[in-house]
Length: 555
Image 1 (tube, one colour):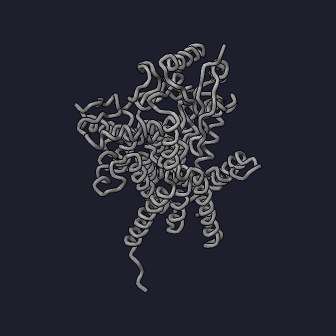
Image 2: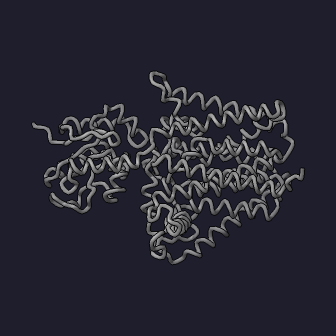
Image 3: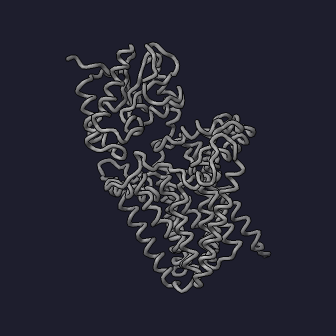
């Protein structure tokens, strides 16, 4: 029998992985019917920001922290419009583009592992495992904005993990170029991986003057690419120069920034969630949250232990130190960075956790060496179980887009938006879906006229709205402002409708909002709401939950 030439076999493998992976992810998108995925609504607001780049790119505004994301995805959404794929709906078109990025990540994994282990079966199974990791799967089927930048970053890390063992000028420049484009899509990706890449060059080149020259070349190439991009966009609305691209300050000094002890627990959630969806926590009367955390943690510790042992046996090779520096260095630096920001967020973990796929590839290689095909088959079964669990974890969020469309029709019949101001948490799904379906309106009613007022359709007050905008305010200022906003709405003749937050005990409010407000502030806001106001049931909906008509308490 004639054997397939190696290059053709490689092309077939990559085609199956990239196209098949993207196809599977698109099928999951259609099955899920929830472009936001049930955990984050950031994609809705990214779609609002993207829309001008689809309809009128010449006059759309650049965002320094996502400098290339909106122009690139705007052009791709126009292509999807021409093909009739979710035409005129960038909120859902983003999911299709992210699925394609997810497929490309499988090809990157295959090439990386094939280069590291030389084993086709191990490379294919490592790609399967990468797809099955919960946050990779999740972010590849929703409309968050991280997937294109992650895909480029992952490609740069993969090339560096192989090439920086024996750097050449061409290799250093190519990695620097791909890496720079990745953080021009998402600025924050620069910080965890740049130190790791430079450390890899320093570690793998024994001639330290030469190593410093490689580092200088890398930085020069990075600055050249960023400078060229800045020059190309010069004069466009929102354009910035090279310094503005290198430092945008996104998230610095915001309510999300800062080191607190509670974030260590959120980090554990983020690490666990990267691997494992919470489907195992769905069993009634079982402390599933802890099962979920400990199962994921033990699995990752075992993988790390086996992988580090395998690398230790190869510690004399530069290839080992390149892998450790790039993937291990990104993980360490990334978790420090995440501890300052939002360590439980999927998009904050996906770019720092690819070490797990590399570690799993080394586990697969060890199993193949010891047990042959039986070992690989067993580990492939673990990946299939992981995929099943993570899809099962998404099942409760299935159909939420359609559910919210029905819910908002129901709410509108019971509470005419022209006569109603809504009191919402400010970080919750009602705010996101009302913004999507009614109007994209900033929180607050300072500019609102007397009732009725049809425009804007969505008028709302955020219980935590000013906490997000003014973290420097005192608790008393936040309480006074919320009281003033509610009383102004009543004085203008509006009905105030409050979401399920009315039912929450203080601990439930803290569970939802402890990342952005401390106990004292949340307790004061909770006390204000229940001491100075009363509420009567208005409606209950399977998707949106209960709503109440708020009234001033009789004194």
